Image (cartoon, rainbow, N blue to C red):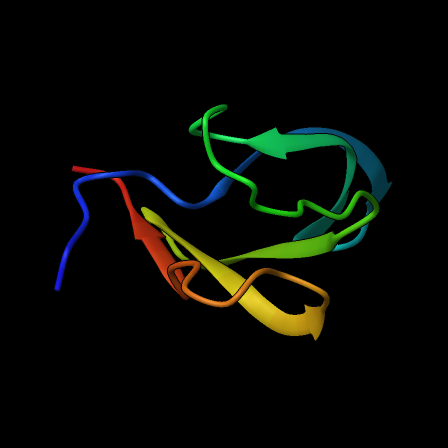
Length: 76
């Protein structure tokens, strides 16, 4: 049952490394998206984003990305 609340975390990402077709980002700050919740948001998550097509980015399984994050982002 949905609560109508956003129980995720909002992170500020910093670019840590550029590879041939990918970039590595680290969460340098993290806080609950809905400040009225008691969600624990760890800092330091790692996200690896790779160009998988001309208009498509993939979020690799490497790293510590949060559960529920999309595996691909497509420009429309």
